[in-house]
Length: 322
Image (cartoon, rainbow, N blue to C red; front, side):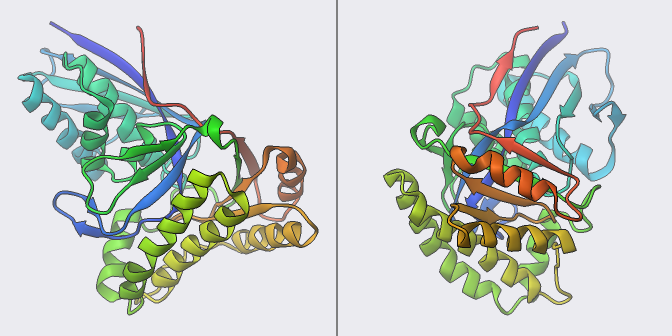
């Protein structure tokens, strides 16, 4: 008997970053993180368990995927099959409505959507924490994309937890898209390289939990003036550890620095906005809704910025009825 389900999950951008693993085998993070789920960045994934298939198949935006990305999907499917007592192979079809593997957390929304769809297709009815733990085993940031709003993943935690709903602290995020195409070094590889070669990695491990505490307290207090500087500090701390790796991991593009400079100029002129960056060249800017349109137009004019995405907080991952 064929079994089918479809799910949607939204990407998230960490306000307090994690970088590095405490347990690579179990995919547990070395430091805590806190993110904002974004309504405008979405992955839709369907899973069909079919007894006629002799192997798992995975397509992304209509293109067949093999190698390491397929292996990560199969590993998650194997965990679901083991939990549900299912033996059938699966056909997985996934579509992102934003650039893939470019530093926009496509693996987060992708594996969150896969975990949601695969468990439903296999006949399971897990709780959101259980889905979060399943997604985390594939991609740590995917644990956070199972939830909407502001979400925390503690160091070495099995699953994420909601901190507060997006509507409780209604900020927006602008994503200044710069260099197109996949990044040169995947996040997992970059983390391992930083851990093994950067003399600043130990300093990152020491500082990151303190900055996470600042970010969490500011979110819980709905204090944007305290949140913004801590968000920027977390991102720059993380990138400092990468820059000190050998050879250096440099995810910045020329346009990355232009956007950062424009955001600082916006603040000097009286606006309130703060930048963050993941392992990629794009810059994400946390901003109050009343100032979002003005800054969006300013960033769009910068050389090297191909587009600016604007997003409010996104919802929990959810199933789509066929």
